[in-house]
Length: 419
Image 1 (cartoon, rainbow, N blue to C red):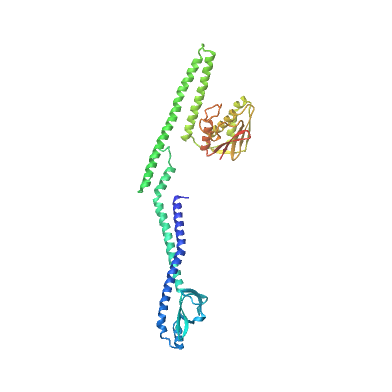
Image 2: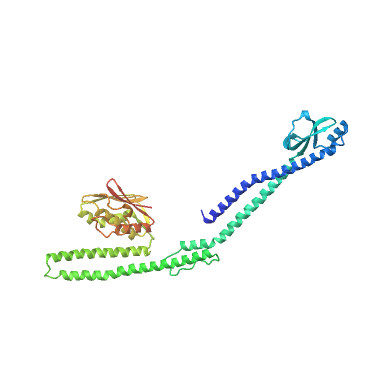
């Protein structure tokens, strides 16, 4: 969920909650105010009854009083239940359907030698109509206010958070290879201005560090090639000496092996640097089975030396877009790793389908954490190599938007390429 929608939705929910609570509260309060006003009028009318009572001299006067005042009922005291305070009662109104609510106040009086109960009534229908009208007006005003508030809040927030989204866009499109880094958009909001300044400083610092590391890796790899070549030539001259003993020759041979390892390490580091600097094109279309067959043919001498066999099963026309040379390095590193870590006479398998490519070999479980198997310079005990082969394979898989995973099942090491 976007930040703008996150705040707007919560503002809307809060406003709706307040509104839902306020409707019944407002209705109850307004109803009580009206009831209180009607009761006050009933008590006022009840206070005026003695004034009219003084003019009643006969039964005809009493009948005339009942006729003239429709809101007044005079009932013998023994035929009605007396209630001290005002109460609400539903009654039928002539000429209208259904019953209506009336507010009634009773008062005891004595006239013409008899006890009567005077009931003063007031219709609540006008009160209900007025309450409904007020509630309708309140609802209309609320929805107008809600729509206006949400709209204003959305557009104001959109404008206020615009510098943030511009900074986010700047970060998403930030490229270390660009020659210049533009400053994020200026804003009058102090917090965003400080954020943009910090982001710009961070971007400049990261790019400078990246360029320095890139230059150092390239220069170091190139510079190492010269002294390694000098060492190799010096050793070759030394081997031509006729006075060398057998032990000295063995030492020189060991030095040759170390130089070979240093050259491989140097080439691998330079190779990783080129990949990280995006110096390879990924616009080729190649057949994975054909690439695997080429790698198997090139490494057949290693398998022959250990009497190993390779079984390959692959679907036809399984192709991939990317860089064929890099993908070939990926398969080469995985197959060479399988050959080196399999015993003599082992059977190594390659399975290629539309969804995945699996290279598996038998062997003992790893003595290292499998989570770090693709990290650089990670090697197990008594393990040869410089620990960069699987790291390079993982990097190539990532550049091809593939996933390289490792698993150990039923005594076999399996590397899965999927994606």
